[in-house]
Image (cartoon, rainbow, N blue to C red):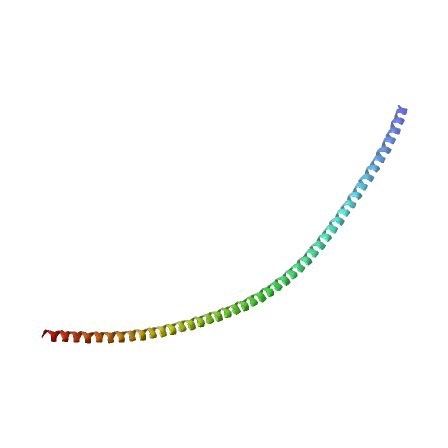
Length: 165
C-alpha cells in the first residue's frame, strides 16, 4: 500500500504539475486572447478613426466642390441673364426698327394710294366735265333741231291752214 501510496502521490504530483502547467497555458492563452482582443479593438478604433477622417475629408471636398459648382452656376446664370437682356434689347430695337419701317411703308402706300386716287378722281372729273360739255353741246344741237322742226311744223300747219281756207 505504501508503494501504491507513493505511486499515487507521484502520479498526483505529476497530475498537479500537469494541471498547473495547463492552468499556466490556459492563463497565457487567456492573456494572449485578451491582448489580441485589445489589439483588435485598437485596430478597429484606428480603422474607425481613419474612416471618420476619410469621411470628414470627403465631406469637406464635396462641400468645396458644391461651393465651386454653386459659384460657377451663379456665374453662368449671371452671364445668361446678361446675354438674354442684351438679346431682348436687340430684339426690341429690331422690332422698333421694323415697326418704323412698316409705318413708313404704310405711310408711303397711303400717300401713293391717295395720290393715285386723287389723280383718278381728277381725271374722272375732267372726263365727266368733258362728257357733260359734250352732252350740253348735243342738247343744244338737239334744241336747235327741235326748234327748227317746230318752226317747220308751224309753217306746215300755217300752210295747211291757208290752203284750207
